[in-house]
Image (cartoon, rainbow, N blue to C red; front, side, top):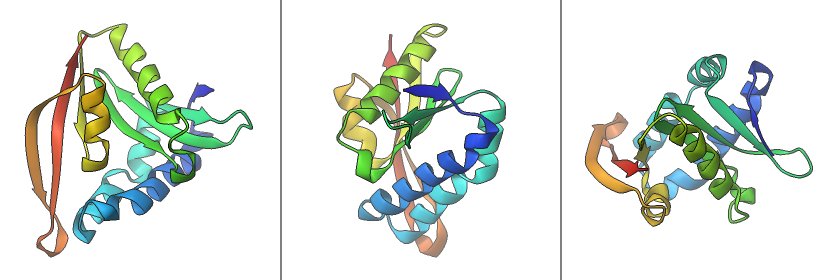
Amino acid sequence: MIVKATLRDSADVGRITTETINAVYPHYYPEGAVKFFLEHHSSEHIAKDIEEGNVWLLLTDEGVPAGTVTVNGCEINRLFVLPEYQGKGYGKALLDHAEKLIAAEYQVIKLSASFPAKNIYLKRGYISTGFFIIDTENGDKLCYDYMEKVL
């Protein structure tokens, strides 16, 4: 079940985000980039997005918070599924939900894709429209693709 997150869910959204980044991203990015991601998805940013009504939480059949996605206008942000729940279709369900919300108002979906997610988006019909590099701590680099899908 996917529900709109409330401020009471902030800790769950933050935990899902942090645990997923810490478990997955070090396999793809250097330490400075991982730290950048964690700071970018801070509890303050999460709370602001929740207050604006943009955050969704996926609950398992047992009611356990397992994933989250944020939709800002035509842009998908912060799509994370806890590592122990990956491979069960939860990410697909969150992406389907986000795309449906956006399709109701827009003709194009936009997102920034990290290395671990890029192939998932390519398989869903997204195309890369730009490649970016951010300098982070210790001279580390964070690389990502900006992607779009025309509806």
